[in-house]
Structures are given as C-alpha cells and as structure tokens.
Length: 240
Image 1 (cartoon, rainbow, N blue to C red):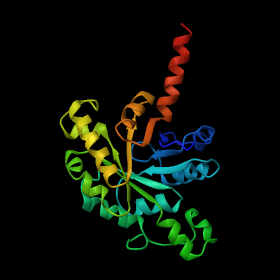
Image 2: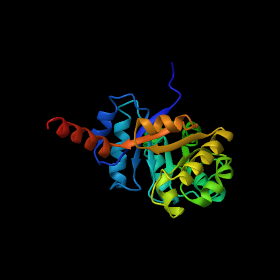
Image 3: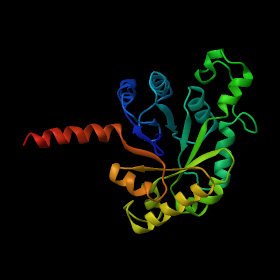
Image 4: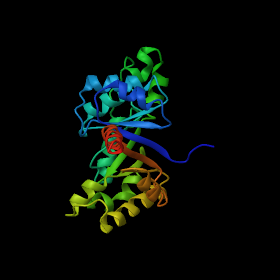
C-alpha cells in the first residue's frame, strides 16, 4: 500500500555521508537547508549527487529568492525548492518564473546534472526542468491572509507552514500558541482547496500525527542534527 504522507527531514550537516545513511531508511526525501546551514554551491552539488545513489528526492530550502540561486539549485538536480517568506501571490509568481523555462525566465543549458550532462535533447530537458516543484513557505500574517491566492498560482506545488517565523510575525514566542495553530489550519485548508501539497515542519511523530489529522501531508520531521543529538542523549541517559 502506498503511504499517503510524504516524509523527509532537514539536513544541515555538510556531508554526503549523511545522505547515504538516510538513504537506508524509508524516508521519501531530504530537504537541504541552505537557508540556515553552512552550505555553499559546491557542497550542495555533492549532497544532491549523493541522493542520486539512493531513492531519496532532494529539495533545497534556498537562502534567498533570486534567479541565480534558483537556477543553481535546479541545475544541480534538486527535485524542487522550498522558498522562504513568500508573502503574496506576486511573490509566488516571481519565484515560479525563476524556476520555469516555458512562460518563465530560467536560463537554459544542457550541460548540468538535471539534463543528463548533455545526453538529453532540449525538448526532454525542458520538460524535466519544468517539473521542478516550488513549495512556498507561509511564515507571516500577510502570507496567511494571502494563502489561498498563493496556492492558486500555477506552478506552486504546495504551501509549507513555517510556524516559528509565523509566531514571531505575530509577536509571539511559541509555535504552539493557539493563534499560530489557527493560522496553520487555515493554510492547510487553503492548500487542500487548491489541490496542492500541505506541508510543514514538525518536531517528531506526535506532531506529525496531530497535523496529519488536520490535513498536512508533506512533512519535514526534525533534522539530522537533532536526530543525532536525541539518539546520543538517549544512550547517555540509559547508562545512568
């Protein structure tokens, strides 16, 4: 039976071996966190290369929204990009255009990994390139208000609730605040209404199950660093 939830984790450690290890699990994807982790372009290239040796799909949370950053992430073969701070439908249209050839502004070369290093014809490379997924992070009050309009933008694959920054935008200091949870439900409903992925970050399986019941279906669960630390803490605790 096919699992209806898509599950991944943030990778923040600059080592392709982390990808190789995660590839031995039943995760569906990894999200390389170029926004908050120290990844340069060459390291991201190696990390995406490592996913090609596994079943994992590679998403990159980009550090900033500009054509060069989007182009690089997709040329090296990422399945898609997770885009921080998309606050309006216009923001969404701009980033989708950066990621698209047809009806977009992405610069074309047949030589990168996504195009098989020149082994694909231009028509096929364009088709594959335009399948790149653009997932928009909703992490401000303005973005919550605009969630339905953002989800309706052609080329947006999904919405992703960033509860921590959303809380900050509301003047709050907890992603579990009832106002943040209300906003989260609104965004998940907007994604479903548009037939798009309803994504979010969760700390672990308890939150995953809680929000799956509310309609979330694309989860980034924890991170490589946190998973490593939790396992080490458990070992140390059991020795007492």
